[in-house]
Image 1 (spheres, rainbow, N blue to C red):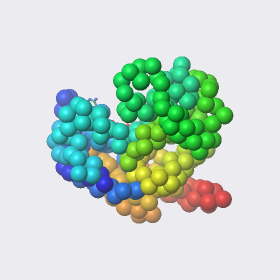
Image 2 (cartoon, rainbow, N blue to C red; image 1 turned 135 degrees about the horizontal axis):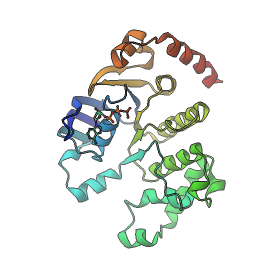
Image 3 (tube, rainbow, N blue to C red; image 1 turned 180 degrees about the vertical axis):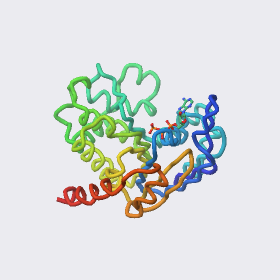
Length: 263
Ligand SMILES: Nc1ncnc2c1ncn2[C@@H]1O[C@H](COP(=O)(O)OP(=O)(O)OP(=O)(O)O)[C@@H](O)[C@H]1O
Protein backbone atom coordinates (compact mmCIF):
# COMPACT_ATOMS: atom_id res chain seq x y z
CA UNK A 1 0.00 0.00 0.00
CA UNK A 2 2.89 2.32 0.88
CA UNK A 3 6.29 1.57 -0.57
CA UNK A 4 9.39 3.65 0.00
CA UNK A 5 12.23 2.97 -2.40
CA UNK A 6 15.72 4.30 -1.74
CA UNK A 7 14.22 7.32 -0.01
CA UNK A 8 16.98 9.81 0.70
CA UNK A 9 16.96 13.21 2.36
CA UNK A 10 19.97 15.46 2.60
CA UNK A 11 19.22 18.84 4.15
CA UNK A 12 20.84 22.00 2.81
CA UNK A 13 23.10 21.93 5.85
CA UNK A 14 24.57 18.68 4.54
CA UNK A 15 22.84 16.53 7.19
CA UNK A 16 22.01 13.18 5.65
CA UNK A 17 18.80 12.47 7.53
CA UNK A 18 17.69 9.47 5.41
CA UNK A 19 20.03 7.15 3.54
CA UNK A 20 18.26 5.16 0.82
CA UNK A 21 15.45 3.84 3.03
CA UNK A 22 13.36 0.96 1.65
CA UNK A 23 10.11 0.20 3.43
CA UNK A 24 6.91 -1.64 2.55
CA UNK A 25 3.76 -1.06 4.59
CA UNK A 26 0.81 -3.31 3.71
CA UNK A 27 -2.80 -2.06 3.99
CA UNK A 28 -4.02 -1.93 7.54
CA UNK A 29 -0.63 -2.40 9.18
CA UNK A 30 0.28 -0.21 12.13
CA UNK A 31 3.98 0.17 12.74
CA UNK A 32 6.08 2.08 15.22
CA UNK A 33 9.14 4.01 14.22
CA UNK A 34 11.74 4.16 17.00
CA UNK A 35 15.28 5.43 17.20
CA UNK A 36 17.45 7.98 18.97
CA UNK A 37 17.05 11.71 18.59
CA UNK A 38 18.27 12.78 15.17
CA UNK A 39 17.86 9.29 13.63
CA UNK A 40 15.55 10.68 10.95
CA UNK A 41 12.12 9.59 12.23
CA UNK A 42 10.36 12.94 11.74
CA UNK A 43 12.09 13.40 8.42
CA UNK A 44 10.86 10.00 7.25
CA UNK A 45 7.26 10.75 8.22
CA UNK A 46 7.39 14.20 6.62
CA UNK A 47 9.01 12.98 3.41
CA UNK A 48 6.06 10.62 2.88
CA UNK A 49 3.55 13.47 2.53
CA UNK A 50 6.24 15.86 1.30
CA UNK A 51 6.04 18.34 4.13
CA UNK A 52 9.78 17.78 3.69
CA UNK A 53 10.88 17.31 0.07
CA UNK A 54 12.84 14.06 -0.39
CA UNK A 55 16.20 14.47 -2.14
CA UNK A 56 15.78 11.26 -4.14
CA UNK A 57 13.96 7.95 -4.18
CA UNK A 58 10.25 7.27 -4.49
CA UNK A 59 7.19 7.17 -2.24
CA UNK A 60 4.54 4.92 -3.78
CA UNK A 61 1.07 5.26 -2.28
CA UNK A 62 -0.76 2.53 -4.16
CA UNK A 63 0.20 3.12 -7.79
CA UNK A 64 1.05 6.79 -7.39
CA UNK A 65 4.59 8.04 -6.91
CA UNK A 66 4.06 11.03 -4.62
CA UNK A 67 7.51 12.44 -5.34
CA UNK A 68 6.53 13.04 -8.98
CA UNK A 69 3.34 15.01 -8.34
CA UNK A 70 2.73 18.69 -9.03
CA UNK A 71 1.09 20.90 -6.41
CA UNK A 72 -2.57 20.23 -7.33
CA UNK A 73 -2.17 16.46 -7.62
CA UNK A 74 -0.20 16.37 -4.37
CA UNK A 75 -3.00 18.24 -2.60
CA UNK A 76 -5.46 15.58 -3.80
CA UNK A 77 -3.24 12.68 -2.75
CA UNK A 78 -2.64 14.22 0.67
CA UNK A 79 -6.30 13.60 1.45
CA UNK A 80 -5.38 9.92 1.61
CA UNK A 81 -2.85 10.62 4.38
CA UNK A 82 -4.04 11.85 7.75
CA UNK A 83 -1.43 13.44 9.98
CA UNK A 84 -1.42 13.56 13.77
CA UNK A 85 1.16 15.82 15.42
CA UNK A 86 2.81 15.97 18.82
CA UNK A 87 1.65 19.51 19.44
CA UNK A 88 -1.90 18.82 18.18
CA UNK A 89 -1.79 21.87 15.86
CA UNK A 90 -5.35 22.85 16.76
CA UNK A 91 -6.70 26.32 16.10
CA UNK A 92 -7.06 27.55 19.69
CA UNK A 93 -9.90 30.01 19.19
CA UNK A 94 -12.05 27.58 17.19
CA UNK A 95 -14.37 25.04 18.76
CA UNK A 96 -13.69 21.34 18.97
CA UNK A 97 -16.26 20.78 16.19
CA UNK A 98 -14.69 23.41 13.94
CA UNK A 99 -11.25 21.92 14.48
CA UNK A 100 -12.49 18.46 13.54
CA UNK A 101 -14.27 19.79 10.46
CA UNK A 102 -11.12 21.60 9.34
CA UNK A 103 -9.90 18.11 8.40
CA UNK A 104 -12.36 18.34 5.48
CA UNK A 105 -10.77 21.48 4.06
CA UNK A 106 -8.97 19.41 1.44
CA UNK A 107 -12.38 18.31 0.14
CA UNK A 108 -14.78 21.25 0.33
CA UNK A 109 -14.48 23.98 -2.30
CA UNK A 110 -12.57 27.19 -1.73
CA UNK A 111 -15.60 29.43 -1.05
CA UNK A 112 -17.14 26.94 1.26
CA UNK A 113 -13.94 26.61 3.23
CA UNK A 114 -13.66 30.39 3.45
CA UNK A 115 -17.07 30.66 5.07
CA UNK A 116 -16.55 27.34 6.89
CA UNK A 117 -19.88 25.99 5.69
CA UNK A 118 -19.54 22.26 5.66
CA UNK A 119 -22.04 19.75 4.26
CA UNK A 120 -24.36 18.18 6.82
CA UNK A 121 -22.81 14.77 6.11
CA UNK A 122 -19.44 16.13 7.32
CA UNK A 123 -21.03 17.52 10.48
CA UNK A 124 -22.73 14.17 11.13
CA UNK A 125 -19.43 12.33 10.67
CA UNK A 126 -17.66 14.78 12.99
CA UNK A 127 -20.25 14.04 15.71
CA UNK A 128 -19.80 10.30 15.17
CA UNK A 129 -16.03 10.60 15.50
CA UNK A 130 -16.24 12.81 18.58
CA UNK A 131 -18.63 10.31 20.11
CA UNK A 132 -16.20 7.48 19.34
CA UNK A 133 -13.34 9.23 21.14
CA UNK A 134 -15.55 10.27 24.08
CA UNK A 135 -15.66 14.00 23.37
CA UNK A 136 -19.10 14.60 21.90
CA UNK A 137 -20.12 16.61 24.96
CA UNK A 138 -17.21 19.00 24.28
CA UNK A 139 -18.12 19.76 20.65
CA UNK A 140 -18.84 23.46 21.37
CA UNK A 141 -15.89 24.07 23.69
CA UNK A 142 -12.98 26.13 22.42
CA UNK A 143 -9.81 24.17 21.76
CA UNK A 144 -7.87 26.21 24.32
CA UNK A 145 -10.14 24.90 27.09
CA UNK A 146 -9.04 21.29 26.57
CA UNK A 147 -6.47 19.11 28.32
CA UNK A 148 -3.55 17.62 26.35
CA UNK A 149 -5.23 14.23 26.03
CA UNK A 150 -8.48 15.81 24.87
CA UNK A 151 -6.60 17.91 22.32
CA UNK A 152 -4.95 14.84 20.91
CA UNK A 153 -8.35 13.15 20.59
CA UNK A 154 -9.53 16.14 18.57
CA UNK A 155 -6.36 15.86 16.45
CA UNK A 156 -7.18 12.21 15.83
CA UNK A 157 -10.76 13.04 14.77
CA UNK A 158 -9.49 15.77 12.46
CA UNK A 159 -7.16 13.29 10.77
CA UNK A 160 -9.84 10.60 10.48
CA UNK A 161 -12.57 12.83 9.03
CA UNK A 162 -10.36 13.08 5.93
CA UNK A 163 -11.10 9.38 5.50
CA UNK A 164 -7.44 8.58 4.85
CA UNK A 165 -5.89 5.25 3.91
CA UNK A 166 -2.76 5.97 5.90
CA UNK A 167 -2.10 7.79 9.15
CA UNK A 168 1.23 9.53 9.72
CA UNK A 169 1.66 10.05 13.41
CA UNK A 170 4.53 12.14 14.76
CA UNK A 171 5.22 11.67 18.47
CA UNK A 172 1.54 11.62 19.48
CA UNK A 173 2.25 11.19 23.18
CA UNK A 174 5.34 13.37 23.64
CA UNK A 175 3.49 16.03 25.66
CA UNK A 176 1.27 13.65 27.63
CA UNK A 177 1.52 11.92 31.00
CA UNK A 178 2.14 8.13 30.97
CA UNK A 179 -1.47 7.08 31.55
CA UNK A 180 -2.89 9.46 28.93
CA UNK A 181 -0.12 8.39 26.53
CA UNK A 182 -1.24 4.81 26.84
CA UNK A 183 -4.88 5.74 26.31
CA UNK A 184 -4.01 7.73 23.18
CA UNK A 185 -1.86 4.95 21.71
CA UNK A 186 -4.60 2.43 22.42
CA UNK A 187 -7.18 4.68 20.79
CA UNK A 188 -5.07 5.23 17.66
CA UNK A 189 -4.43 1.50 17.29
CA UNK A 190 -8.09 0.57 17.90
CA UNK A 191 -9.29 3.11 15.35
CA UNK A 192 -6.80 1.81 12.78
CA UNK A 193 -8.05 -1.74 13.35
CA UNK A 194 -11.72 -0.65 13.10
CA UNK A 195 -11.08 1.20 9.84
CA UNK A 196 -8.45 -1.03 8.25
CA UNK A 197 -6.07 1.93 8.33
CA UNK A 198 -2.32 1.67 8.03
CA UNK A 199 -0.26 3.89 10.30
CA UNK A 200 3.34 4.87 10.89
CA UNK A 201 3.80 6.11 14.43
CA UNK A 202 6.99 7.94 15.35
CA UNK A 203 7.33 7.25 19.04
CA UNK A 204 10.10 7.83 21.56
CA UNK A 205 8.74 5.48 24.18
CA UNK A 206 9.90 1.97 23.27
CA UNK A 207 7.80 0.32 25.96
CA UNK A 208 4.67 2.00 24.65
CA UNK A 209 5.46 0.96 21.09
CA UNK A 210 5.96 -2.63 22.20
CA UNK A 211 2.60 -2.70 23.97
CA UNK A 212 0.48 -1.72 20.99
CA UNK A 213 2.01 -2.56 17.60
CA UNK A 214 3.00 -5.75 15.81
CA UNK A 215 5.87 -4.29 13.81
CA UNK A 216 8.67 -2.01 14.94
CA UNK A 217 11.12 -0.22 12.67
CA UNK A 218 14.35 0.96 14.30
CA UNK A 219 16.14 3.87 12.64
CA UNK A 220 19.72 4.91 13.34
CA UNK A 221 21.66 7.55 11.43
CA UNK A 222 19.02 7.56 8.68
CA UNK A 223 19.07 3.79 8.11
CA UNK A 224 16.74 0.97 9.12
CA UNK A 225 18.66 -1.22 11.54
CA UNK A 226 15.68 -3.18 12.91
CA UNK A 227 12.48 -4.36 11.25
CA UNK A 228 10.56 -6.94 13.21
CA UNK A 229 8.21 -7.84 16.01
CA UNK A 230 8.26 -6.00 19.34
CA UNK A 231 9.33 -9.23 21.06
CA UNK A 232 12.52 -9.30 19.00
CA UNK A 233 13.74 -6.07 20.58
CA UNK A 234 16.34 -7.69 22.79
CA UNK A 235 18.89 -5.63 24.75
CA UNK A 236 21.38 -6.30 21.92
CA UNK A 237 18.98 -4.98 19.30
CA UNK A 238 18.14 -1.92 21.39
CA UNK A 239 21.87 -1.25 21.76
CA UNK A 240 22.22 -1.50 17.99
CA UNK A 241 19.46 1.09 17.58
CA UNK A 242 20.22 3.44 20.46
CA UNK A 243 23.78 2.72 21.55
CA UNK A 244 24.98 1.42 24.94
CA UNK A 245 22.40 1.53 27.76
CA UNK A 246 21.02 -0.75 30.47
CA UNK A 247 17.95 -2.12 28.70
CA UNK A 248 16.85 -4.67 31.27
CA UNK A 249 14.81 -2.10 33.16
CA UNK A 250 12.96 -0.99 30.03
CA UNK A 251 12.15 -4.54 28.99
CA UNK A 252 10.99 -5.58 32.46
CA UNK A 253 8.88 -2.49 32.58
CA UNK A 254 7.12 -3.52 29.37
CA UNK A 255 6.36 -6.97 30.72
CA UNK A 256 4.79 -5.44 33.83
CA UNK A 257 2.76 -2.94 31.86
CA UNK A 258 1.48 -5.54 29.41
CA UNK A 259 -0.34 -7.25 32.26
CA UNK A 260 -1.78 -3.95 33.35
CA UNK A 261 -2.84 -3.05 29.79
CA UNK A 262 -4.61 -6.38 29.39
CA UNK A 263 -6.67 -5.81 32.53
N1 LIG B 1 15.16 21.51 8.77
C1 LIG B 1 16.34 20.90 8.93
N2 LIG B 1 17.47 21.44 8.44
C2 LIG B 1 18.66 20.81 8.59
N3 LIG B 1 18.83 19.63 9.21
C3 LIG B 1 17.74 19.05 9.73
C4 LIG B 1 16.43 19.65 9.63
N4 LIG B 1 15.53 18.84 10.25
C5 LIG B 1 16.24 17.79 10.71
N5 LIG B 1 17.56 17.91 10.40
C6 LIG B 1 18.64 16.96 10.72
O1 LIG B 1 18.30 15.70 10.17
C7 LIG B 1 18.60 14.64 11.07
C8 LIG B 1 17.32 13.87 11.39
O2 LIG B 1 16.42 14.70 12.11
P1 LIG B 1 14.93 14.24 12.51
O3 LIG B 1 14.28 15.40 13.17
O4 LIG B 1 14.29 13.65 11.33
O5 LIG B 1 15.25 13.10 13.57
P2 LIG B 1 14.29 12.43 14.63
O6 LIG B 1 14.68 10.99 14.67
O7 LIG B 1 12.87 12.72 14.32
O8 LIG B 1 14.73 13.16 15.96
P3 LIG B 1 13.85 13.50 17.26
O9 LIG B 1 13.48 12.20 17.85
O10 LIG B 1 14.77 14.29 18.13
O11 LIG B 1 12.66 14.29 16.80
C9 LIG B 1 19.25 15.29 12.28
O12 LIG B 1 20.65 15.24 12.08
C10 LIG B 1 18.76 16.72 12.22
O13 LIG B 1 19.72 17.60 12.78
